[in-house]
Length: 570
Image (cartoon, rainbow, N blue to C red):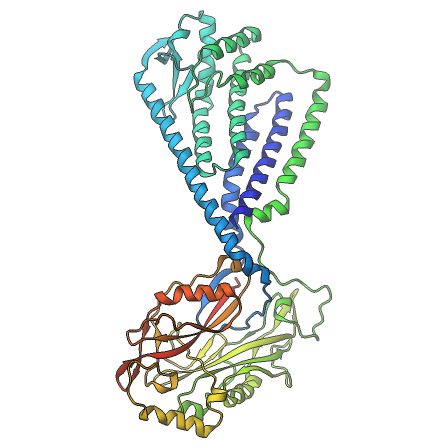
C-alpha cells in the first residue's frame, strides 16, 4: 500500500535527519566539516525508499500465473477483512499517486523556472576582473556562484565600492564554493525534491545541507583570515543588501541562517569539548539505530513473503504439511506409469483427480495414505491409484533433514484431437498439448456415471443437429476451443501477491464461433478469493481463442477453465 510506504519513508527520513543533526554537532565541536552527515542523509532518504522494494522483490518469490493446475497447491486461509478493504485501499493509493505526480510537476516547473532565471542573469551580467579574479558583475544579484559545469562568481555592482580586504573575503568565500563543487550539490538536492516532494523532512534536510555548505565555506575562509569580527560584520552588511537567488550558493542565503553561521564562528570551550562530542556521538548512534528498525524497514520494503519456519524438534517419522517444510516434495520426472483409461479415451472424456497422499523421507509413496479429494470419474481415480506406487519423489526437507510430507497433487487428463495427454502436476505426458492448453471441465461423475453412458455420449456427437447459435459442450464438438497463446492480460492482484496468497479460479463461459468470449456468460464455479475472480473477469474479454468446430463448422462452446495464481519459489 502506497500510504504505508510513504509514512515509513517519512519516519525514515526524519530519523536520518536527527542522526545527521547529532553527527553535525559532534563534527562541529571537533572542528571538522559538517556537510557530510547531511549529504549522506539526503542521499539515503531518496535512494533507499525507492530501491528497497525492488531489492526485497529480488529475494522472495515472484508472482506467476498459470492457466492449468500446479504441483502441490498451497491451501491458505484468507481473512474476510482483506476483501472488504481492497476498494478503499486502492482508492487511497490512486489519490496519493495522483497528488504525488501533481506535486512533482509543480516542483519541477519551479526548478526549470529558476534555471531559466539564472541563465538570464548570467547573460545580462558583464564579465570583469576584480582584484585579479574573473567575475560576472550583475546589477543587484549576488554574491553567488552561478553555473554548474563552468561555475562563475556573480558579483553585485554595489559591492565594488567595498575596501579591497572586504572584497577579497567575499571573493574568497565564493571561490571556496567552486572548489568544493557546491553547485552540483545544490542542483542535486533540488532534483531530489522533484522526485519526492511530499517528503517534508527531506525539505528540512536540504535546507540544513545548504546551511552546512555555507558554514564549511566560512570555516575555510576564516582558517586563513584571522579577523572573525570583520568577517561577521561583512555577513551582516551583505544580508541587508542582498537579493536571494534560487539555486545559487550564496555568502548569506537568508537572514534566518545568518545567526547560525555567526554562532558557528564562535570558539568552543575546550573543557567541555570531549563531553559534547561523546554525547553527540551517542545520540547519533541511537538515532541511526532507530532509523534502521525493522518496523520502518518493513514498511519501506513491503511485507516479507511467508517462509516455512523450522520446527524446533524435527521428527522424520511425522508427516508435515507443505507450509511447514523448507523444501517441498517434488515428483521426479519420468517416474510412474500413469495410463489414460481406455474407455474414457474412446469416449473423448477428460477430467482431473486431486489426490492426497504421504511421501516418506526416502521419496516413496507411503502405502495406505492415498485419499481422493476430488475426482471427475472413478476410472481416473483408479488410474492414479495404480500409478502412484511406481512414482518417485524428491523428499521434503526441514533444516537439511529429509522428512515425510502430506502432499496434495492434481492429475489432469486431457485429450487433443488425436493424442491423449496426462498432466501430473507440472509434468505432461503425451504430445500436442501447448503450455496454455485450455482444459474444459465438467462433472463427469454425474454426467457419465457408467461406461455405457460414456459410450452413448461419445456416439451422440454424430447425431446432434447443427446449430451454430447453440453453445455446445466439450464432448459434443469434434474440435475443442483452445486459447491463442499470448492473448489476455491476466494480472496477479497486488494486494494478494504482497500477502503471499495463492489460489485458483474455476470459471465457466461461452466462446463464440469467432473465437471471442461472449459477454454475460461468465460464471464462477470455484474461487479462492474475490480478487482472483475479478482478475479473471477483467482479463477474459481480451483473450482470443481458436473456436470449437462441429463437423467442420465453427460453433459456440461452453468452456470450463481453471486459472491458477501461484507464487513461484526461487
